[in-house]
Image 1 (tube, helix red, strand yellow):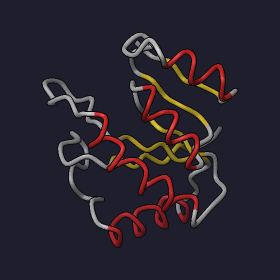
Image 2 (cartoon, helix red, strand yellow; image 1 turned 60 degrees about the horizontal axis):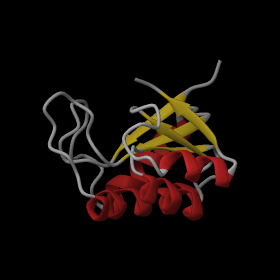
Image 3 (cartoon, rainbow, N blue to C red; image 1 turned 180 degrees about the vertical axis):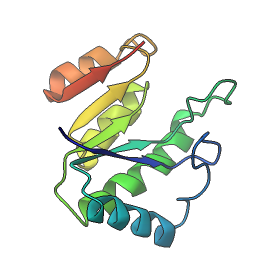
Image 4 (cartoon, rainbow, N blue to C red; image 1 turned 135 degrees about the vertical axis):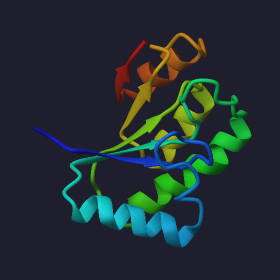
Length: 127
C-alpha cells in the first residue's frame, strides 16, 4: 500500500480550496504530507468539482509550477500533476514531476498523448 498526499493549489477545490495559496502555507502543507507518510504527492491546479469554472493554461501553470518546485526543494518523493492540458503536463515534467494524472483519459487535449509518450513518464488515466 502507498499513500498519496493531495495538494490542491486551487481557490475553489471542494475539499480544501484556497488553503495552499501562499509560499508559507504551501510549504507547511508539503511538510505535513511528508511527515504524515505520503509516499507520493499529487498536485492539482484546476478544480474538478462539479460546475467548477475552467482554468486557462497560463493560470494553471502559475498555480502548478511553484508547487512542483516547492515539493522538489523538500523531497525526492514521486510527484504527480493532475492536468488535462499538454502544455501544463510538459512544463510540470520539466520542472520535476514524475507522472501525470489526467481525468479526461488523455482525451481533452490531443497533444497530451504525445507529451506522455515522448517523456516516457507514467500516466494515470481516468474517465
